[in-house]
Length: 314
Image (cartoon, rainbow, N blue to C red; front, top):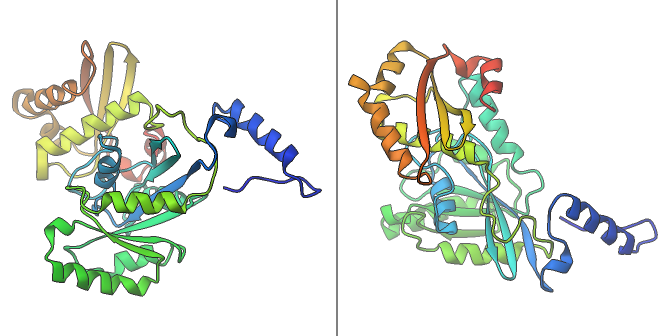
């Protein structure tokens, strides 16, 4: 993001104006960072389930985004921050880009594509252990040529397969290609160092101790959804949503929305066993003393109803 200049070509007035705007927004000014400080925005895009969220969690060294081996796990645009003494990268995690079948699918695609606005570096993730197909090319065609190809899941592929995938991906004509394993961390440090080198000099966009801009209620709702997917495994389709209906610490009430009565039965489980297991798993990740309530409601075909989507923040 370039610094604006005033009409006579001097940037002195613009610098003052920018510093004032940054201060008003709670953002550190250039005076608060060392000379040569680099900062900027990086996004990971790709088809669903290529490992975008896992890669972000690996880079940050902690869990900041929901991870599960099914499409549409990430549904919102989430910003997470890597802070270093001489730089700050703001990563934008996005839903996987796919052919939509519902209004929600269309909105997820819109969320993913708008993440490219104002981005310094775009990274396309593809899998080392799956063929590069029309879905990958569909995403690649929408990215600038100075983008980066990240070949993920190299821990699940033989060296010959990795080389073949990189050769195929060369058709995209991107600036750089990085084979990595988001699960083991192999190759991730080299990717991060390269991304840092691509960033312009700039301010610290987020405080040095901030890891994500996601509110706590959103994170709790995502934890509930993640554990529901983990406990029910293949039984529960992705026609499920979660939201915090009440937040008055230590009491937290999370609403679980499904599309069918049969799905409600799956979520509750025999004798409430599924809800109890989900609640136990989520509480283990909350601060001590949290009182979590889970409530299941049916909203038929919510994925295709604009009012329902807006109520859920999509």
